[in-house]
Image 1 (cartoon, rainbow, N blue to C red):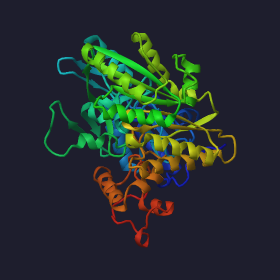
Image 2: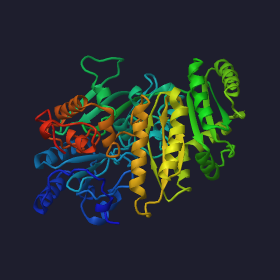
Image 3: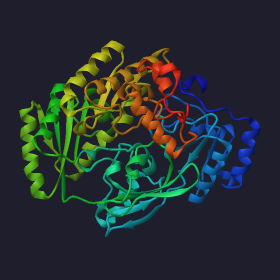
Length: 503
């Protein structure tokens, strides 16, 4: 299958760049970045043709790998001068196509920004470059009894810059929050090449909260070159309960009951039978493979707090119909339980040649109903689903199993995934919890937001990037696209704001 055949439908391209313009840009970039940091040969570009959403692939025009902030500034100035769009890329683990390259654009790789600049145990923070792996921050802070709380399943590989761009979560985000709740300061380079600092060491700073705005902006407003993150003290004790259920809906109802009791677990995760079996075969975590669903509930705090909460949650789970409730006997068993959950995504790859990972969020009280509807849609589309998700905050990750070599299956899978996201909106939720919109969910943005809201999103984009050169075509759809999708009407085919970029 050609790269063009793997291009998402309706993804618009910026203007074409001639061979002469490309060669001129390469010469100028080589004056800024060492030669090994400017990739333009076909073989060198292939590794960058997709991110974690590998259903779509396309080679970028150029890849640039700067090593300093000054080089990033100069690269962006050159791209603006040549009117060439830029897509920033971290570790490439994103699952919504946020780092999907442009055939007429520069892919700005930040993998060389991989240093931890400072650990400040007194102020419980760390200053790091965007290419630092998520897990590496906690490993570096461990000597001080500290750690970084957000822990995506890909934390062994994903970069902190990408976490900020997508506002990543993880299995412990229920109690400790998403990335936006765990960062203090960002240094960002604008498309003009200006270096700005957002946030600070204090609890609040004057002016608009641009730190929160930049978090989750998916590379559309600026390029993040340094991050200061919060560090937390390791809890005195952490213990995990594993509860098995013979009914998926009942497990969903148990989640709502736990939160309704007033207990906020450090983590509350759910897996259905398909994902249980896959993870057990892969990791040997000790999961009950006959269960239709399991809940993993971690409680942390002081010894006294955990002892009291463990007993209360255990009784509640049994009252909600759990067929078995197990308490991890030691820290090794606790980590083994979590290893199975964190390995669920790669493990499900053993069940099918391909899978499509969705990401939507719903109110916890609707978990049971939504899971039942997903099961009904699975039968309707003739595609199996493995459900793995952050049950405590209602963040679903249905994995749709398919075979890309079977004609029509990818398209059917995309339709199924879109229906799941629209189902989340129907139940009062949202189309993303932590993976971002990227290229994957552009149509569903038209479902969730009104034309006026989308117009405001574009106005914010234009304030930072008036020519639309930073990651164009991602995260926020044009109103024209929404009209084609059939979700809204555009008056006389005109966008309501004259400065909104059309790609």
